Length: 370
Image (cartoon, rainbow, N blue to C red):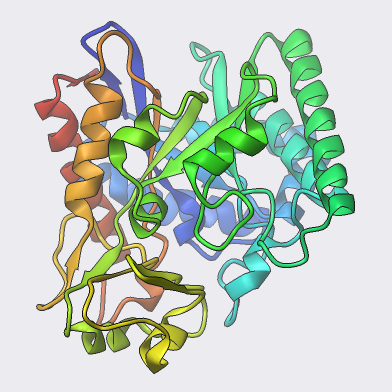
């Protein structure tokens, strides 16, 4: 979806396809023809934006076969779908039975992460619509915090230099700029936006910046004003919301315990790497908790639980209603947890409802669909 900002800038709104368990090209074509086409029909969008997720294997196959890449581009056009952003955080196996800490591997100290991201950048230049010359890729916040050593930090720095060089060469060759946004997340080396400034402040802002995930920032108890004014390029905003429990109501979070994904949990007096640890007594119960469980934007959980949607609304306003141009032009709805939510869900209907929720908020800030 495209929206016109009052400044005249075009803002792209997409939903992230990491919600779909497709690891190969056949699966990707299936999700496009199936759920994505249905979401487009439900929203009535002339063109539906996708934040496409490609596993490392699918990315290698596409880069090695220009015919397959052209076929994918043609299929997107036929279905009224467009791609200006890729989710390059999960490397593979994002819908395995157990993901947890594996989602952070390979990290940015490992050559596989660099190769994967450059594959994605090359692919994105071919998938961008003809009238779009800038794309974005979101990626992990360098590494999970444990095992961080000076040698690892040096390897990360070398890989970021190589990434910048590769993106610069790609722009010179294709005329299209691909920017990579590192996504702060609780428990990681880049956990907060101040850490992003500290660790990424010396990189080339023409190619590297941050991807702000509103769920992550809310769990990290960051102020929206601080995140919006961090001083680094905001390559993308992931439109997402966390689950929150009031003091004394934390047992209700047990409905969201599951074995696939990591659900970091924080309160003002402590932090737990995963929800079971918090519920086992790892955090005080006299303070509200926020848990990294991406919740549908349009629906409230059963009481006493709530979500951090007010934080998301504040962040959207600060990014989109700032004087002049918007602080980011790529927005990606990223509720990937439909398969582990309690109760039955219709994923296409849920995604369509989330996109409609986001469209209404953006319309209230003066953005018009085009």
